[in-house]
Amino acid sequence: MSKNLFIKDSVIIRNGKLLRNGKVVVQNYPDQKLSSFLKEIYKDQELKYPKFFKMDKLSKLGYLASEILFQNIEPDPETALVFSNAASSLETDNAYAETMNDFPSPSVFVYTLPNIMLGEISIRFQLRSENIFLVSEDFDPGLFIDYSKTLFQQEKAREIVCGWVDLHNSDYDVFLCHIGPEGRYDFNEEELKKLYLPTHE
Figure 1 (cartoon, rainbow, N blue to C red):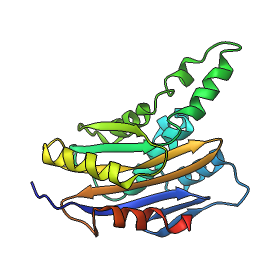
Figure 2: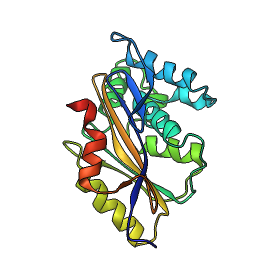
Figure 3: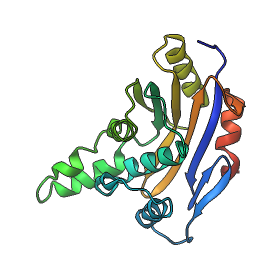
Figure 4: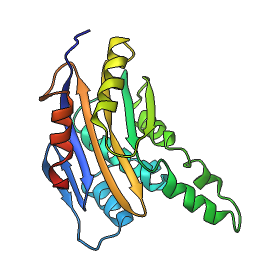
């Protein structure tokens, strides 16, 4: 397998905007709640996946970003998922804790692990490769690169989706990129930072 890896496409969901390869796809109103924004993306993209409405917000963010990332293509079943964030599933953990005062909700409990998001994406796109969810204080390009290159070197994946899906107190920050042996940009720390940072500046 080729040792050179490239970034094929990228998606950002941040500050009321959904961007694909740097271009705005959906933009919301400044005061729009996250739940409404996510539904707006779902409707705008004419998605037909009823399980979306049962997901927690973290899974919805990851699912929607993946739908846009894989737009007009059928992903290789051997596409690995390497995701990270700073808060794990804290938003859902807090929601579940609130239900314990009355009657614990099994439908909320199932989302108290961030890996569930990876499961939802794998089911939707019929991915059968490796997946891992890492917790890091900040967006760490080196972490994604090291893990992704290891997967390729060990021939455990033919392509990879890696990135940051963070949610805490309704503050959300999503950046996903599709990695493979061919693509638009070199898969290195500098390019990842360039793609991730523009709307942070």
